[in-house]
Length: 69
Image (cartoon, rainbow, N blue to C red):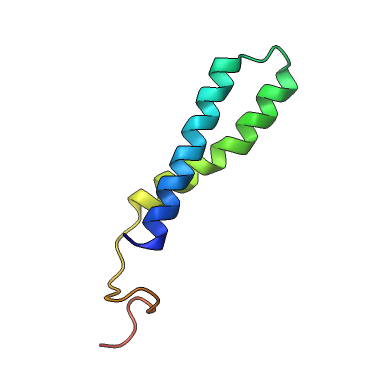
């Protein structure tokens, strides 16, 4: 598993747990809801973009993709 894919899984896990926490705790304060949504939404966006991105042609981890033969 590539480091990008692994970070995508972690970001998805953090984002989903954050949203579940928001729904479970159901804070009465609108500011807490707004701030927690602002914190956890980028995690979800990052994870989805990692999963939708094209695969690189790296054969070994650490090589720059699409460089040379």
